[in-house]
Amino acid sequence: MVEDSMASTRAVVFKESENLEGKRPKIEGYDFNQGVNYSELLNSFVSTGFQASNLGDAIQLVNQMLEWRLADEEPVNDCTEEEKDPSFRESTRCKLFLGFTSNLISSGVRDTVRYLVQHHMVDVIVTTTGGIEEDLIKCLAPTFKGEFSLAGAELRSRGLNRIGNLLVPNDNYCKFEDWIIPIFDKMLEEQTSEKILWTPSKLIARLGREINDESSYLYWASMVRTHKNLGCVIFH
Image (cartoon, rainbow, N blue to C red; front, top):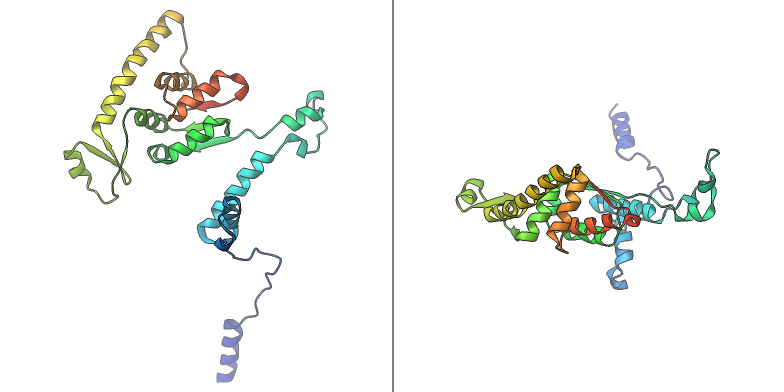
């Protein structure tokens, strides 16, 4: 009886393994003895494991979108004559949407977003009101590094606001209000006198032009929007 129980337990604990060779990638990190090759380093994330693999998968997916052309697909039966044209199919690429929340613009990720827009690497931006506001505020005054543990009440007594471990002085919001109110007044006047209908995209493009600051992703988006062939639009 005991022997049967031990045999049963042993069979469960030492169950024969499924062979994963050739079915799953092996976990291997980057070998820095090869020097620092950023492309290979990023590629190695896929086989690093944990969250690095999720980032590696995302990088591969983005690269697929950047490299895709309509010419990679077989024409379907209901294609138009233009869609059948080889040159048209080779020039047709993915339309890239970039979505983010305001906290990323409050942080240093804003500079990455600005680079992507400046160099026409995305076609459409989808963000929140805060993602618009924070970009403009940072053109007027800096955000500072703090700590997640700082008490809100104590910061409030010093005229400071906390976004995670970032600190934003009250003065930044005052400067923003002083900057934007005259623009809104002028836009209202234009709406009345010139019958302009201010859609969210038009409003945001106007603010990007008005801020006229190359550190702003809205500034670059407004420049792209001015040149229709670049095809970048902001949705709010």
